[in-house]
Amino acid sequence: MTKQFNKNIILGISGGIAAYKSANLVRALIKAGANVRVCMTDAATKFITPLTFQALSGNPVHTDLLDSHAEAAMGHIELARWADSIIIAPASADIMARLAHGMANDLLSTLCLATEAPLYLAPAMNRVMWENAATQANLHLLLQRDIQILGPDDGEQACGEIGTGRMLEPDEILARLLHSESEQIKQQPLHGKHVLLTAGPTREAIDPVRYISNRSSGKMGYSIAIAARDLGAKVTVISGPVSISAPQKIDIIKVESAAQMYAATLAAAKYADIFVATAAVSDYSTKEFFSKKIKKSDENFQLVLQQNADILSDTSHQFTDLFTVGFAAETHDLITYARNKLERKKLDMIVANPVGEGKGFDQDTNQLEIIWADGQLSLPEKNKQTLAYELMDIIVEQYFKKQKTHSD
Ligand code: CTP
Image 1 (cartoon, rainbow, N blue to C red):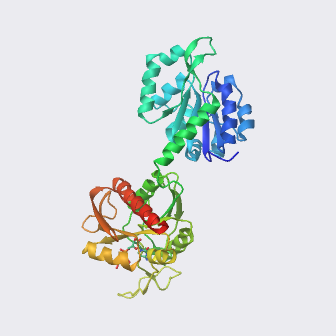
Image 2: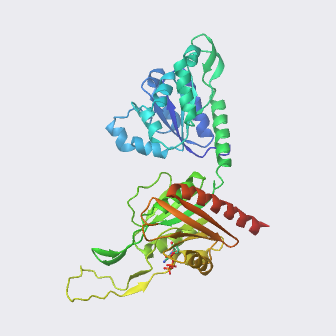
Image 3: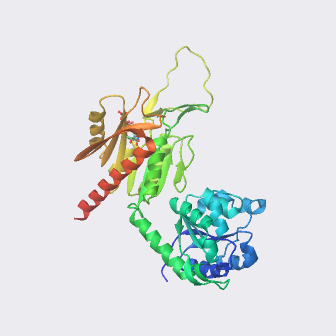
């Protein structure tokens, strides 16, 4: 069978008789290509043993939030990050209530709170419990938060009653997951594409304790990386030293100097479809590195600098199929300089932003002027993440336009 579901899945199992069906769900998910890790609530282990799921999934089963041994192997945060999707089947009335109210009083509920992955619940409970106003109110809250509810089904229940509350059959759960994933892919135009970015400042060492750098915080670059990720792209950021934390599901390659950023970018560019150069690369580095700390001596001290290679320009000239986007941070004559860089560096697009007098660097907001061969668009001052989403939409549009022109 061809792989249909090449994803990391956490299968959460809460306490309910339908837990026995989850054994088949593990098999169905693995057969469809998924890597499955099972997390059971305490109540679930009373219905079916963790050993069953360990044997079926080929992975240790996660049960305990406060187990130092398990935390040392793959801690709950690491596990929450690992998951591409979390599916809880069966989802009892109790786990629905706990998730609806943001509780984190066992491993499964903590994982759900700590993940950015989509969450799916396949409810299973007695029909009266399902119809109870409390469960329905919890369901409403969960749906409002885009948690996807698969089922429940109608029919005969383990308790002997007939009504709504049966867990969907494993094949049906899998079919709905696959459908939902393919709908998401349709909304992710960059699915299957690789976006490469440079971000942050560079540091050019003078001696073991001193360097030349700039005020770039990396915020704009990291915001664009998040926007590209949310549009479905695989994202790699070649990042200079920044203090912001790494966003989830983005590969960060840390570098210090312009030369290191150059090498890392050119190596990664051959796998990329779109390259966005947001880094504030130092134009110069010291000609000589002083291996010992420079001591104070004469009144004047001269440092000889040499020009660094242009990462963006060399990348765009070497990888002509790559859609290249440059940034132009300018204190004056914004459009003129930006247009000049668009042509000189052979770019598909340039994003100009004013800097200085409290603008641009190390700020939460920015304003952008986006220029390409036959178009121009202004994005007025907004927070950097909103701007990043709007900019990525324009990049996507122009990228596909270029692809189409090339294939015509
Ligand atoms: N850039 C780069 N490598 C360099 C210098 C700049 O990749 N060595 C990229 C930046 O990431 C940015 C764009 O080129 O996307 C423009 O950077 P900027 O510093 O404004 O341009 P320069 O070519 O350095 O021009 P100038 O300093 O004269 O403004």
